Length: 455
Image (cartoon, rainbow, N blue to C red):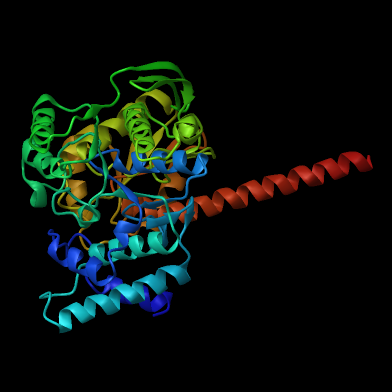
C-alpha cells in the first residue's frame, strides 16, 4: 500500500473510539505474527486520564537530550497520523508508515483467514503494531507508549512494558471504563504487574488506595512523584520554573517548556520515569533539565502571540477544563472569545459550567468527527450556563474561526478548545497564518532597513 491507500484502509476499519475493541487477544496474536517487535527494546507505558501525553512528550525530550534513541507513540493526532509515531524526535515518514502498515495488514488478514481471530484488529490495534514495528526497524533503545484508553485491556499493554507511569486519574470514557473514579483507577492500575518499575502521580485518596493495592498484589514498591517540588518563578504566559527533589537527585530552577501549573506534576512523573530508566542501563538523568525545558506538545496550552492571541488547548474533560480555566484567569488578559466543540459523550454540562463563564463571547462549532456534539445541543447547554452571553452557532470549524477573528478585538484572546479534534482541524491554518504574518513583517523590516541605508 502507498500512503493514501494506507489511510483509506486504516480509517475504513472504523473510528478508533467508535469501533474500539478492548482486549489483548487480537493485538497479542498480531504482534506474535509479526515476530513480537515489542521484545526488541525497553518500553515505558504511561496511562492516566490527564497529563499522559505531556508526560510522554517530556520523557521523550529527556531521552533525545541525552542522545538516547527513543520511540514515542501517542494518540490522537492533530493533523497527520504520522504524528503518532516519533523516532529520535522526528515524525515517521509517510513512506515508512505505509511500509509498516502493509506488513501489519498482511499479518492481520492472514490471522483472519486462518480463523485465529474472528475479526480484523481495530484501527488502534493496528496503528499500535505499526509503531512497534517501526521502533524495532529503527533500533530504538526505549519506546514510550501512551495508552489510548484505560490500561488493562489497552493495546499498548501487549508490549508488557518494564516501566509504568500513571498520571492523575479523573472521570473520562466512563462508557468503557466505568462510572466511578475507583472503577477507572482499577483499569489504569492493571498496568502495574510483577517486576515492573512503577511511578505514580499524586491522586485522590480513593484512587491512590486502588493503585497501592495493585502494587501490593504485584509486589511492586512504587515511587510517588511530585511530593517535593517548589515553584521558583512563573512567567507572564504561565511557564513555571520549578525545583524538584527526588530520592536520587535535585534539579534546580527548571523552566518547564509546557505551560500551566498542572505540568509540574507531569514533569515530576517524567523525571521519576527517567531516573527509573537508569536502572535499566540508560544514563539519561543528566539530560532531565534540558529535556523538560525543551519538550513540545502541540495543542496543549499552545499560545500564538499574535493580535489577537490564539490559545489552543484540547481540554476534553472536566479536569482538563479546570486546568484551562485556571490558566485563562491567571495569564490571559483582554476580551476572551471561546471557540468550543466537543464529543457528545463527554460531560458537556460540567465542562460548560467550568469554561463558558470565562468568555465574553462563545462560538459553538462541530468538529469533523462522528462522535461530535451538535451545535444545537451545545447552544442549549450554553443558554443555561450563561444565558446573557453573546453566542454564535457556526457548525463548520473554519467558518467558526473566521467568526472569532471578526468579533474579537486585536488585544483579545481566541481560545479553541473542547476537543483535540477541533484543535487539530484549526491548528494548521492558524500556524500557517502566523508564519505568513511573520514572513511579511520580516520583509517589511528588510525593506525599511534597505531604505534607511539608501538615505
